[in-house]
Image (cartoon, rainbow, N blue to C red; front, side, top):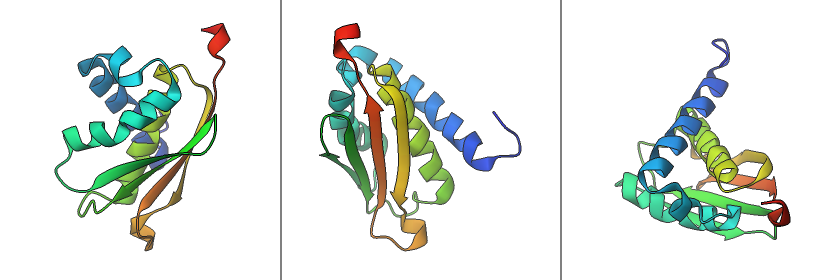
Length: 128
């Protein structure tokens, strides 16, 4: 972790958070063995750990999806968003995704109506 890069530090916190929550919720059940199944569970996982706001999942094809966070008053700040990026990255990796890229494309702290995360990955099921 880079001590000079605040965003990178929070991404690493999010990755560790994913390891912790997925281990607690029985990793195979939470990840389902595929990236899409993991992302489909993100709204339920969010609801289990937060009392405000909600997350939505939207598939965008075989290797991409969007996760959106709405109404998370008090939680949505830039540092929190970086932890979400790290958590989504690690969850996708644990579900078998290769070459994972998670990009925050909209943020409530910048005036958007929701925080939006574009998740893209490679997945070679035959190699698993």
